[in-house]
Length: 286
Image (cartoon, rainbow, N blue to C red):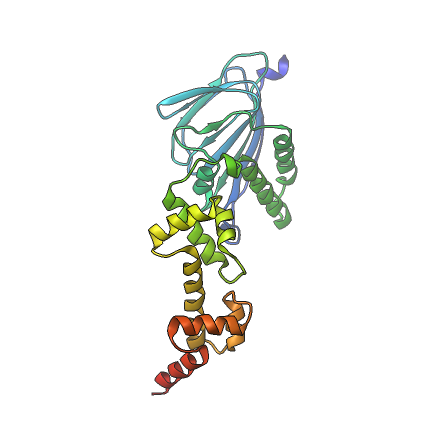
C-alpha cells in the first residue's frame, strides 16, 4: 500500500512553566506515527520518561542486554538517560504507534508503581479499547497551550497511570518493612480523622492481627498505641504553641470531644491539658 512507503508523524511539544513544575508530573511531548517499512530508532536516550503504545504492526525492542518483539496492544517504557533502540518487524500491517513523553519529580516513581523496571520495560495487552479512547482524547486536547487544555492533558495522563496500576490483590507481597512504612505514612496523613486500626489494615491490604504483630515488632508498639501517641504529642504541641481552645485542639487531633481527649492526655502526661498549658505559660513568663 502506498501509505506504508511514507512515514506519517504528528507531534506536539510542551515547555512547562513554574506553575506546572509544582506538580508531580507534566507532559513534555506527544506524537503518533505510521512508520516506514525500514523504520529504525536508536540506540539513543533522552532525559525524560517515555511511553510507546503499539496500535498496529510489530517491532523489536532492544534494552540493556535484553530484547523482545512487541505487537498490537503492547506498550513499552523508556527510562530517562537509558539507551534503547527499536525497529520494525516485517508483517502484514505497518507499525502505528502513539508515544507520550513526561517529566516531573514523581515520574520515575510512577514507573516503579505501575510495574515497569529497566530489566522489563514493557507490558503486553494493555492497549485496550478504553486506552485507545484515552490516547485519542489526549491528542484532541493537546493542540494548544491553554491552562484548561494542559490540566485536561494531565488528568488523562493520570487515567493512563491508573489503568496500568495492578489491582491490589494482584500486587506482589511486600516485605514486612514495606507494610509498616506504608502504615506509618497513612497514620501521619490521616491521624486527625476518625481512623482505626481496621482502616490502616485495609489501606495496606493486610489482616489487622498480622499488621499489628509486624508493626509492634518494628516500631516497638501496636499501631493503636502509636496513633494515640501521635495525636497526644500533636495536642501537647498545640497547647504550648497555639492559642486554640482545648476543645479545638481535641477535635483537631482526631478526638470526638474534649472529654475523651482530656482523659487520654492526663493518663499519658500526668496532668490535664489546661494544667500543662498553664505550666508552659509560667515557664515562658519567667
